[in-house]
Each structure stands twice: as structure tokens, then as C-alpha cells.
Length: 330
Ligand code: DAH
Image (cartoon, rainbow, N blue to C red; front, top):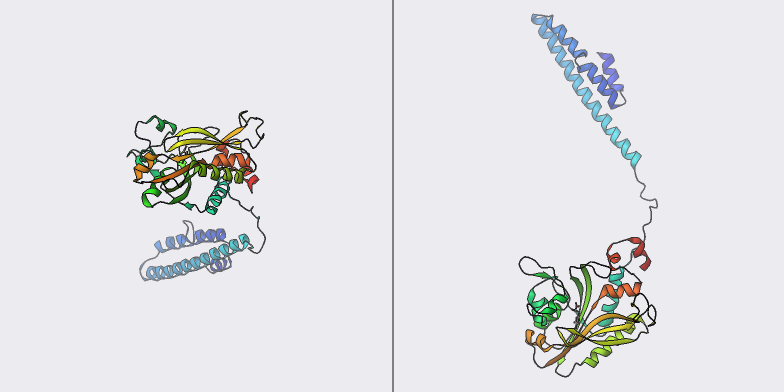
């Protein structure tokens, strides 16, 4: 028995230890043959022999267990040492991030209006019919509702199709004078070169005493704003229709790519359509219970601005997260 004991003590790896364990406890091992011997004995001799075999068995069990633990421990420590990472070494230095073009454009617009003392208001993305349509002079079955396809939930609530409902929420919770913008995401079921189901808008609303706010104020503030964003461009106001403003206008700037000569981007018109605006329709004031006030409002799509400012031809690419595109706008 002693040579086996010695072999176990000197064993250097787990595989070898397992071989020794089988030599000791296996079917053809040391104890198997000891038990065969036991069968040939009788009486006291048998008892004494059995006791001795059991004692040896316990000794080997303990010895194998201790040795196994020791070897396993050593193996784990060796593996740790081998795989250790030197945290004092330089790693791959990852690139410095930057704001997404949509967000940096958004920030520029917000900064401009905040500098003119506009407050920033917020509203929920899941809206109800009243705030998104009804109070904005868009009654049910009004054909102008078709201007904006809508994601509806089963309970009749909807994903807001524009930031204009925040006009209503602000007027319902504050007293005039109001001078606010609302940046945020809006949703419509569209997907093509110039539309994505989620995009961003900034809404503007100014309300003050009757006669204190006019279309002329609106015109001058937007002209200055567009020159701030796009540089030395011509600005024109084109009569248009929005249910929540009367009169309404769409605002164009001279094409920043061809300077009005006509190109692919401006579809040879020399002009780029850039935002919608107007003086607040009396029905909107009625819906929020405002009396003896006047006001103007405007709304613009941030992605449209970002595409023009960054020269991105496909709106969808702004949402693909492709670093080859995004890295150009650091
Ligand atoms: N809500 C309009 C839209 O999503 C944009 C808009 C146009 C907002 C005119 C206004 C406005 O406040 O006066 O198309």
C-alpha cells in the first residue's frame, strides 16, 4: 500500500490523480482485491481484517480528497496568473463621441430661442384626441386630419403627430403672456427618402394681450432665426393652410446649395420649404378659454434642418446609427 500512498502524495496533476484513484478504488483496484481476500477468511480473523481494510479505505479517501483540492486550487491560480490583464498598459483608445446631427441641430435651435427669452415646455408622447386635434381646431371628420396620418392605440389615445398639442397644454396650465418653444419627438406612419415614422419638431408659441402680437412680429423673428441657422439666405412667406393658425404661411429659404439658381435638392425651384407658421386661430383660443389675446405660432422639423445643414440626402440614414456617416459630423 505504501508505494501507492507515496505516488498520490507526489502526484502533480488531476488526470494522474484520477488514474491513481481508480487504481485504489476501481473495480480491479486495490480494495476490490482486498475484499475478495475477505471472502476467504472467517471468524475473528475476518473481523480484524475487515477493520483494517476499512481504516485504510478512510485514509485513502481523505488523502485523495486533500490532494484533489490542492491540485484544483493550484490549477485555478495558475490559470488566473496566465490570463491576468495588466491594467497599467494602454488599451485600444476608443474614439471620442459626438452629438448626433439631429441633436446638435436641435440644440442650436433651442439656444437661439432661449436667448430670445422663450421658455422650454414639454408634453407627453402619447396624446389624446383633444390635445392633438380637437383643441387645435381639427374637429373629428375634418378633412385636414388627413394631413397627418396617425398611430392610434386601441383605447383611442395616439402617438402625437406634432408638437402643437404642447401649445394647448401650456395655455391650459399657464396664463398669458406666453413665450414658449417645445422640442420633441413626433410620430407618423410614413417611411421614404424624406420621412421616418419618428422624427423631431420644435413648436413655438407667443401669446400676449390683444393687438400686442402680430404677423409682422412673427415674420421678423423667423427671418432673423433662419438667417442665424442658414447664413445669408432670402426668406419668403407663402400663404398656406393650417387649422390652428389664420392666416397661415409656409416659409421658404433660397436654396443653400444652388443659391436660388435651381438644382436637384430644391427641385429646380430655387427655394427650400422650411417651416409652417401663422397667427393663432381664434378657435384655438376658444378651446383653452383665452379671451382678448393675440398670438403667433410656428412649427419646424429638425431632421429637415439637419439634412440641409449637414448635406444628408436620405432622412432614413440619420437613424441607422452608421458610424461612417456620424463620424463626419464631429
Ligand atoms: N404642426 C404642424 C405640422 O406638424 C407644423 C406647424 C405649422 C406648427 C404651423 C405650427 C404652425 O405651430 O403655426 O405639420
